[in-house]
Length: 415
Image (cartoon, rainbow, N blue to C red; front, side, top):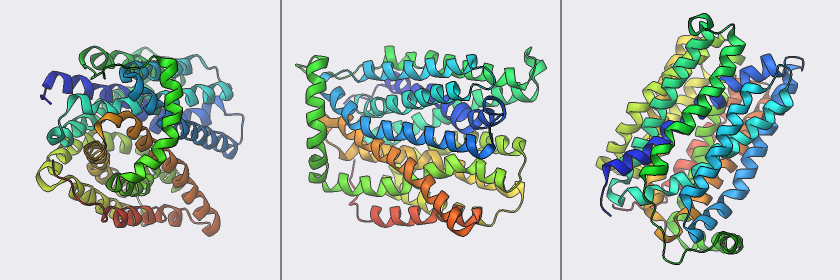
């Protein structure tokens, strides 16, 4: 495959586009705004329960749909078309948050559910398109570029959004509530505009004799059943997916729980938001650097490096006492978060059959979403049994250790 810089950059800019949703909406403003604005009349534990169930429901939906969507895309040859569809669902839902009135927690959660569905559903097809723009020997660097641009783009918009909430008058806004609502609208516009380079700049490799949609759907469901058996035929794929399921569980749980954990320790909201910004901006150069680490040291060694750092971060989190220590934890997470995600995607793309890329990436995303359900449950049950939030965070260490042990059974594949 010929390496085309323009196509690679066009593909990577979708990370720049949709990462704004992950930072401003998922990790940043939605949980706080739900509790303090849309569900202010509910008990805090009640709104948390609703939010947790909404996230779990969206994760289950993607977990079930991802392999089917991937199989359909492989057989119909229309990955970009399906990516556009899910992207529009996410964009419209995110823009809809601007119009949800105070007290309208049900509609806010519904819009959030659809936004998460659009975000993760679109990633099934976005991830698989790496095979259309990157030869195997460049996949580490290309995947890392995507994650790096995601951290930079999402961080830039998030920084502006944080400034809007801290000083609404500087932006011609009346108060913080209006600033947050406008931020949701900005995320939707950002996502839509910066998705255009991929839509118009990436040439998708279409197979001869691609099937009509209806026939592709029927065969896609049939393929879903067969793929469970197919994945097991590829030993390296099967073992790698098992390892990925374990360690990405820990990564995703830290992403979702870090701010809540800091709040439980009594840290100020301003400090938690600043720590998120720190993670984003460190994550950009670090994710790109991990692409070079993967090429020079080997992709699996790069993943192991990130896993060992995460083990240390988890232990550090258990002993957290002050806000500056939380900043240190956020900075270290920024060093490896994008790296472990980008190298995992690149290595998986290298070991799967090319003609079943979207189908196999459907399983890849399914494993990630299944982990997003189990990880928070592990933390919740540990907290319930021990009554100690520090022990709950420390329980994540089990996922990283188990993931590393399984990953050690994967044989390295050369480019």
